[in-house]
Length: 147
Image 1 (cartoon, rainbow, N blue to C red):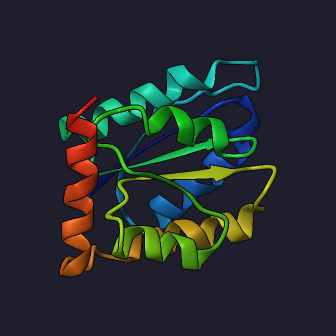
Image 2 (image 1 turned 135 degrees about the vertical axis):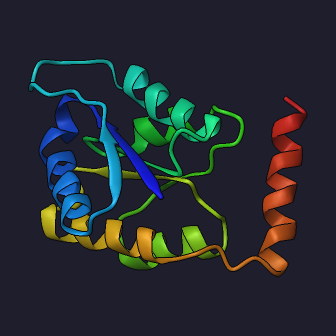
């Protein structure tokens, strides 16, 4: 598994905390920035992560902004991306188990470092359940192909 992460300036500190989680767990990862608190445009960073996930360069993506909303909107514009904005561990587990989410979106202003860490761990530790959920994920793919 390889995880790719990015944020905007409003998500910088939480993203750094999440990188620490990946290091502690020896998870292969790539942090694509930004690396300073200067204002940046979140769609540019969301694009870097989603393109890497779609291409197979990374297995999962993590995006952080102030609320997580902007990042999730951008990420879900990309075919093949199922980005989940999560504020709880339960949502993270369900997004993986039932929706096969491949990008986790978080809001630094919404969740603190401790909750953010727990959400990421739940996201990483949960596999897609398949079964009846596979049919629904396939339905999402069909909707994407109609764009």
